[in-house]
Image (cartoon, rainbow over all chains, first blue to last red; front, side, top):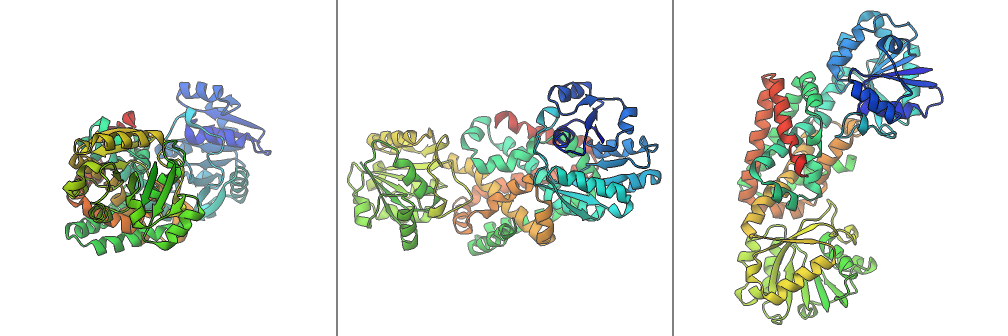
Length: 275
Length: 275
């Protein structure tokens, strides 16, 4: 089986590395509109070959590891793939993608969101075990063909992932709270601290806590601008709920209600009975 | 030299372990009002012996690794130490501690804040290399005796720390932004997500980003309630600045000003030219 990967950044490059270890996959070919990314991907052995769009279209399975708007466009250029072809998109938000799959290839497509990533990006960020032991969410697979569903599940499990299924709209709402809101917060923290503190003091005083909390603010602005755009309404709702919680904390501190502060912290700490 | 450690939790226990590797320190003795902590500290070899308060007072150097209010109280019970004794407190906020040192032992005291820690606490959380390669801030050391200043610096360097000095009030303002605000945010994020998401979805969807952002919410509510109390005014100011940044982000998203969102993220990303 030939696997074609469109987009050779962190997600696509790491998928190339992972698929090389899967017995069913004979060859991994890659495509990226950025020629420097193609060159780097070959140098780092992320894929076996760089190919043109027509050859990508002939792959048995095509991974779309590009931003959401690029995925929506690419789908339109894949309307003439073979009926046996499987198209797996790795977009971070799913509802708009699912809505815009051309009906003629709906059965070919398995919308997927691997819950994996780092704040790094581009082909040099690719790592072979990015997906291992992580969850992948497959969305609205009742619309995918049986052949495609089975192949997607087989490949994700072969690279060490746990497969779960979910409605795309539900996925986007959860992702707003558990992934997109934390990014917004991390960027806001970085901006607040940069406005108030000079570089030397940040460097002196930053311990592990601040480093963890500001790590997500290293993420690609181009990529995250788009994710925020795609999931705008859910993200605004999540930000509102977060702001409410912060206001509770601020009011308790302002009122010097220290027992209240402690109880509020104890509530939050329950999260770690889960995680 | 005998080192006495008051408080055998994460900070004190780790200090015990670290000091055991320092040539100048012949014996490490410990004290904790919690008898279970004393037992655990001995079992884990954090200190060589558990002793009473009178013996702590005869130590050459006394580390106060307890909450700020405990430190302030303990100082009053140390007014009769030998003039050669060095007292090093490890409190997270410094201005109130510096203000309340009894004048008769001001020269004995070196106020210190090691920029190290984890979200875990208690003697079982102690680790030998907690302090290695981290910064320790010494505050208002112009009030400390020369002997005490030199000993504190020698010991902190011997356990692998980089020593910097700072005014206590400045320290507290910086700490509000770089340590206390991130904790408030992490607790607020945990509460917002717990209120909106069920345990199963959190577990399925939480990737590294959310885990990092919510890790600080595992910290001890008892300890952090006190830190928030000690640094109330600075923390409120820091929360206000953070809230402003979050509002900027929310407004840009609400206005669908995606170029603006990207520029705002690019500003934040500059933090990582520093860290």
